[in-house]
Image (cartoon, rainbow, N blue to C red; front, side):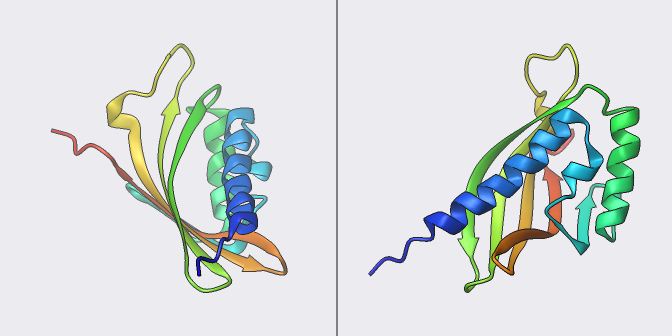
Length: 135
């Protein structure tokens, strides 16, 4: 018997959609709305150790080098680890003003870890890695 988790899958997709809508709006507070307080984010050269540090970094970025940028996100998979945890893999990229597509060197593979707590899915950890190794 196959057990479907369509409600949980939809909720998780909604969390990711909210993150990227917040990115497109340049809204750091909304960006971390579905992050746990102790969430971590690891990006090349950066280890952000809490929701507040992620929010602060995004606020600085949205006010400067990320201003006007938009994001793309292609969901690859959602794997459930029991009833209250999930690992999501996606392909993500940043498009800056004037660009019609994301250059290959700015595409990353991302891993999201989410936890279901009190009926809501929250981001616990995020990590990304370049999809293409620079030559």
